[in-house]
Length: 620
Image (cartoon, rainbow, N blue to C red; front, side, top):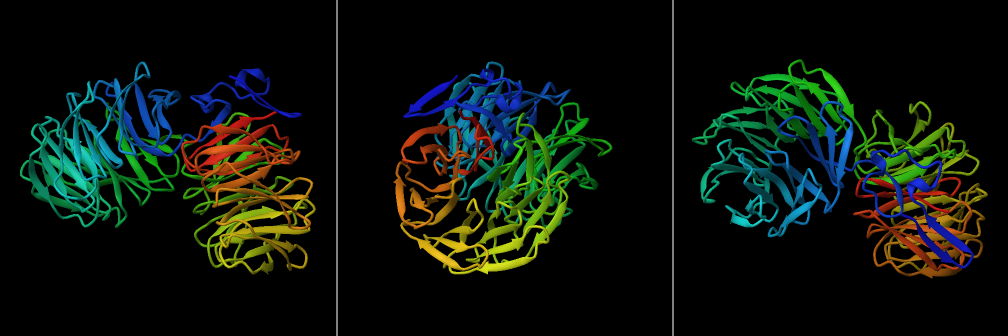
């Protein structure tokens, strides 16, 4: 589909994939795209994994949809996105035909896996869905919700059968026994409840955990129940009488997030926030093996139906496959992400860098949308990323230790660490000549650094709240800083002296950018406005109205004719940078757009979202 929009002499066209000879290869980055987008970078955040009962495919739920992989080749086979609005959990029916997905809004949607058709919605919960399970015969769906209730639903009609609740605590996990007669639920209060699946009658309460119960699982023979908790322990229970059998502590006080039994019932596996996947003897509770390699928490684990393969899904954005008997790592699937905080093109246009709220620096091929690499160095969050003008260095800020790191863009090796800020660093920019770096921090200051040695040069003080965004003028003589104190300050780069303060925003100023000719400054704020300023006089030129929420990012196109803004409502707005008139709105993100960036030739716009993906839009 092509969309043509005309405004005076400006023509902006969002072109379909097949209309250009240098567009992306037809592959998963182009599946199920919103109108006008040419590729999606990132597969979203992993929310659950499950094999089909016949072992032919693996389903991976992310917050943007459900990905299907051929179980033999592990190649992407399909993506279901219809009705996917913030997926929180998933379950696949025993016959492999129906997906049940829960959302953060409390709805449950049923999809036909074969046709891809949305079947029905299960409406009734008033808070988010934390866990879903099918009964062994596939006729009933159980749902656990933050509204403190458990719902039982007819899997064919979507009609609610029973709703029951034992207390006022959130229900975090739910599982059926193999005979389908008992349901186990884990609550935020650390208790486990056993229920009659036919009547909803509460049968037993199991106590012992001191924090939320994240996962519960029945052994295939129905005799044992295993629970994993935020208190870092795993507990084994007699599923018939409810007696506590054993407590396992090898996750070392880190949260236990997922539990699953092997098909033969001889082993169960746990995934924890200590970044390990652990195998246990189901009868004795003896620790058998610890599988390491993930660099973030393990949120989901699953066995293949033949019991030969174990897969773990992690906050590091990967799925790792293991030989279930030897513990040997056999395969890794990459490309999943968490919240995108920043996106930047390399100067040559070949690479896109993304920085993430909790995760790492990731590099992507700008021509194919495929994941290239993830930084393996010690890095915790990259709220801002920037390429040096020569493309040889990448700067990341946002590490929890209040530092900035410089990386070799080719080898991705750590080059230098900039230390001195006393609070989180949320913005970073290179000077046009590549000699200086400016950083903005929640410690209310901006700092200048030698880009080669990492030596601190000077500190810009004066803001009374955190510095949210920093930018150099095209000639490098001026630095603009935007702050939570609702102001923008202009500074002389060489002297480090304050020149002007721009006032007018009535909320946090979250982003600042210079036009390519240096005459105009654009700012976006928490007051829902974008303001254009004369960079020489500081006088306000235009106020761009049309947003009612936060403006997280503003950027000029390389020719200076278009201004793009990333907004809290998940949209990207394009504006005529000279007149301030709105041109069009790009719709496709389900969550707030935290960063926008133009390629150096101005033909591609990238938008990074809290929804854990980047969308690429072609402009002409």
